[in-house]
Every structure is written in structure tokens, then in C-alpha cells.
Image (cartoon, rainbow, N blue to C red; front, top):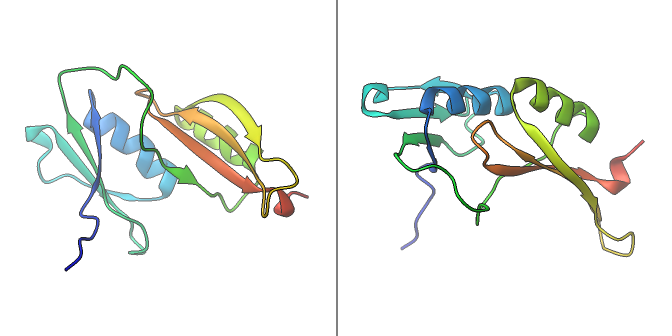
Length: 128
């Protein structure tokens, strides 16, 4: 027997607001059958990505995430970071693997509107 991902869930103060940010970031659709209960759900209309859930919790985020999403844009790293910044994210820092790594990547660590960290990734070999 095995398990599969049912939802990737974000605890948050404002489920609708955070779900709206992530719907914009990922081109997902909002599906909110339990919004009155403090829950907003997203799904990938292509069926390729995992569903995301946003649940209202009383406590605020305190420490760094132990799990985060890595996003690979179809545009350049800089273009995607700017798009997500306009949507409400905050860039923190940009890092790069050493050139000696097999398939090195460059990434920008960002925070969504509630402070959850995520990364925007670009393969160094794809830079023009």
C-alpha cells in the first residue's frame, strides 16, 4: 500500500488572501466549498500539480518553514521574481550552486504575503 498527496496545506491568518496569491503564482483555480469554516482550496486546472489548501489558524508564523515549494518558471528568474513581487511576495536573497555542481541552479528565496518561504529556481545552463 502507498499514500498519495491529498492536499499541500498552508496554515494562515487569511485563507482567501493567501489562496489568491498562490492562485496567481501557479495559475491555479480557487475552489472554496468551506470558506465559511476558514478553508479555501486550490486546484491545478491542468491536473498536473497537487491541490493546495489554506486553513485559518489562530497563531501566526514564528520560524522558518521546514517544507517549502520550489517554483520553476517558464520565464527568466528575474521576470518571475518581479511578477510574484507585484502579486504580493517579498524577495529575500538570490543564491547559486557552484559551477562544479552537476546541473547547478540559481534561485531566489521569497516570502508569500504571510511570510511562508518559497524559492524560484532557474537552471544555470538555461540562462541567456
